[in-house]
Length: 336
Image 1 (cartoon, rainbow, N blue to C red):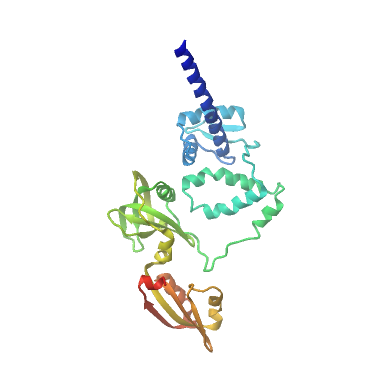
Image 2: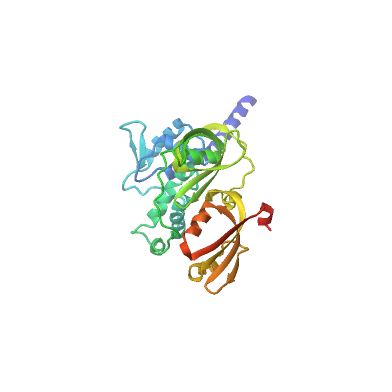
């Protein structure tokens, strides 16, 4: 009798602890079933895994079958893998309900986060972005929030360019390997057309204008390099997890490594026509910038990192800039 009582108590505890699990899976699936396109069991499994909910394909399939019966969810079983989406007139599931302000925030954040979040994590949020756009639709009460999207814009300071094409799956493999600290096998083609296959350690991702760059270390090397993502022909995240080294992406950027430089600090001075250089009085080149006002020119002196980007910026002024001098500095001198 005692043993039977213990067994019953254990079953009761298992049943109680399984209740939250039985609620979590359907809710997470309902939030991730799209309205305008179909999704598969494997895609939903990947999205759940990205937020820490690991479920078997079989468990997800059973839950989807039940949800298709209880909700306005369409199951396309004509071909495998089956596809799931909300029916055209279905109200869907709006949990949590986004306010107009929250919908506006998500809509503004979507484009800026697209390349800066791990692809799997961004995919898991697609339905939240879709709900935000739906809440800001023409037939909603969020008129002011909807109008705000047409009232703000990020304006380029250079000639706008279309983003270079990145090979399919490259961004996904790179961002996921970076997120999970996994070694990455790539095939890379440099600017001269030379192709290289290598195993690399992804350390950081940066967006510069329309381009994406990966800071990384090549196998058996301890220095960092920057690779343009659009020049990576193929990428495959391995199953090998690496111990992330001491690496400061902010400092790497400050050293000019994304500006095609080697991080060499210099003391730069030049003369610039007053009309062309007025903006430098409002937006200095550096915190220690000094300005000497001459008859027709400003003499600008500042501590910078010598990069190809800086050289192109100076050349862009043509004959409005003259008398350019560079003095190389030791790193400790540039930080005083």
